[in-house]
Every structure is written in C-alpha cells, then in structure tokens.
Amino acid sequence: MANTAQQPPHLHLAEVTASQFLDIWKHFDVDGNGYIEGKELENFFRELEIARRGAGVDPSNPQFREKMREFMQKFDKNRDGRIEMSELAQILPTEENFLLCFRQFVSSSAEFMAAWRRYDTDRSGYIEANELKGFLSDLLEKANRHYDEQKLHEYTQTIVRLHPHNSFDLKFGLLPVQENFLLKFQGVKLTSEQFNSIFTYYDKDGNGYIDEQELEALLRDLYQTNKKEIDAKSLMGYKESIMSLSDGGKLYRGELEIVLCREPIV
Image 1: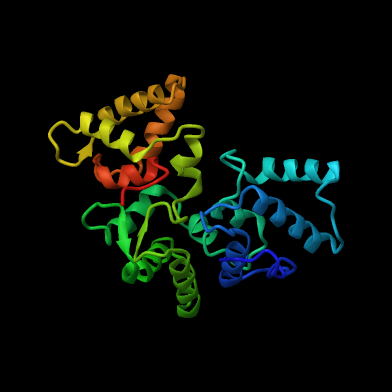
Image 2 (image 1 turned 90 degrees about the vertical axis):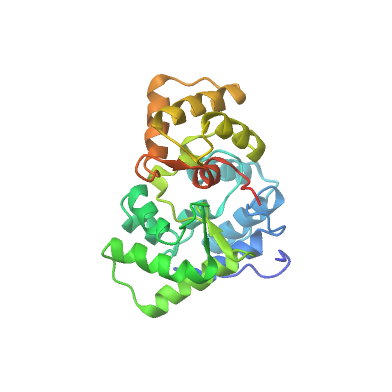
C-alpha cells in the first residue's frame, strides 16, 4: 500500500516512463481501489502544484480550492469527482504513454476488438496474463506502429503489475477513448445483477448474445432502470458505439457486461 508520507515519486520530471507512471499511481491510490479520490485527490493535486511551481501551497486557501475545481473540470472526463487511471494518463507528461499510445494508433474499437478476439476465444471478455504481450503486439502491428521488444516488455509488465489477477478485461485501459461507451454513458450505473436480468430477458434463446435491435430495447430498459431520459439521437449514438464492439452483429454477454458494468462478474 502506498504511503503519502513518503516523497511523491517522479512528479517533478519533464517526462515519465510507464514504470514511473505506475509508481505515481500506486503512491496516491492509497487504498488501492482504482481511483484517486477524497483526501488522496487533494494530496495528489497539492503535490502536483508543488512539483510544477517549486513552492509550497496551502490547501485551506480558497484559491487552492478554485484551482483544484478547474483542474477537475479539465481532466475528470466522466464527472465522477475522482481521477481514474485513464484520466491520470492525460495529466502527466509521458515520454510515450503506455495507455494512450495504443489509443492513438488503434483507429477504432472495431480494430481493437478484432485483435482482442484472437485471444478471447470463449467470448468471456477476458484474456489471460500470458497472452497479454501477444495481444499488445498484435495491436501495434495492426496500427502499423513500430515498436521494439524492450518497450513492449515494459508496457506488458506495467499492465501486469496493475492487476492482482491472472486475467485482463476490456476495461484495463486500452479501448480507444473516443469510442469508449463508459465515457459516453455518464451518470448511469448498472450492477451485474441488473445487467444479467435485462440481458437474459432479451437473450430468449439463451445463445449468449443479442443483436442490434435487442440492444436498443436493452438500452431503453437500462435508462428506465436508472430513471434517466434519453432522446432518439443519443440512443442511436450509444447503440452505434456499442455495436462497433460486436462480432458480426453479435454482442456476447461477457463482452457487453464488462463494457456496461462497473463491477464485472467474478
């Protein structure tokens, strides 16, 4: 567990590597829940200001609070009041960000999923740790992106260090951000139980996937469950974003659950 009493690592650097990025993340995500929030967030912003300004700051000063509010408006993309890893990746000056480099050179979610399915053969939404390096290599090759073995090894090991388990799901940070449905579907939270109930209702033959028409009805139910209004244009945009993840028009349960739900089924 990180210790905020220690000297914050690497914030003073002009550029940080993938490993240094992870050191920063673990330092400030004290409770290890995958977010920098609350007191952690205040500590992070204070130390970032000190590193950038070279002087102390007073968190009790109203100007500090105002600057922190402006900072969150800029970087808290999903407006949940906390910083997640993909958001931190856009804050820090990286030499070649191990998350964003894939998003920049993989042009669409369809390309991402084509590479993903070579390894996720059972459509569970997960790939194994020993397959991760091959998956990342395939992504870079599909994007015609040159890489060397040392950098690929660094990216792979950094992602492995982020996860306590031996498998990786679609939310581990590489899905192209411009098509990331979680960013577009702000304010709607879906539990695994809610998802299973809705998915089972529309997957009437029990084959484990639904089609585009069924997805539209599922999304309407999802909004109603969360007591949210949705217009036809927004619904169409959300549907198209998710269908870009489909396999020949088939949206499999495991993949869709991981994209839509905060907590995947264990």
